[in-house]
Every structure is written in C-alpha cells, then in structure tokens.
Image (tube, rainbow, N blue to C red):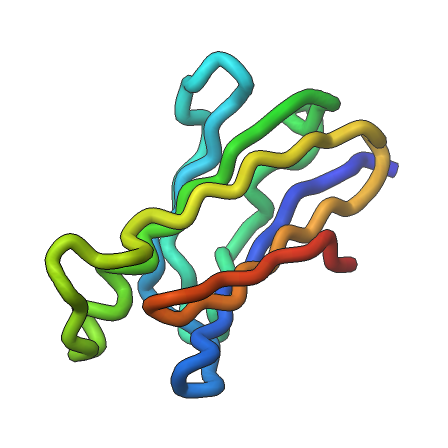
Length: 115
C-alpha cells in the first residue's frame, strides 16, 4: 500500500469548508513540490503527495489564509495577524495516510494528524 498526503481547510468563523485557499507544499530544502487550491469542500482534488513522490522526510505546508479571508469580505488589519499559515511536519511511515487538516480564523489556527 502506497502512502499519501492530503489536507483540508475549515473556516471556524463561519463553520464552513474554506474554498479557494491556495496551498503550497515544500520539501526540507525549501523547494516547492506541490501546489493546489481548495475546492468547495475545503479539500484538494488529489493528494499533495502519493506514489513514488511520497517519501519520509520533513515538509512544510503553507496556506494563504489571509487572502482567503480578504476574498470572502472579512476586514483584516494591515498587516494581518495571520496571513500565511505555515505548518512544518514530518513523514516517517512511507505506507501511511498522512492527513493534515487546518482550522482557521483571522486570529487563530489549529491542526492535527487526521485520518
């Protein structure tokens, strides 16, 4: 069984999936290896990593939360308290499903290893 990396974003201000959030995945050398934008369900259409590209290592996910909130009409201070949310994490099991959800508001975020 091949492992995979997925994510989704939930807007905790409105209690809805966060659609249109730009996401970028970086490897441990800082190279962008995957990008995407969340759909109406707050998810990407495909895993960020899967198959041969899914390897143990350190990764960073960047979520453009500030741009999302501006686009839906929330007034944010300049600069925004949270603009780009950065989550650094590790993958140790090459056959596991790693799911990294993000729950966001303009002033807080939460994440966990989901299933």
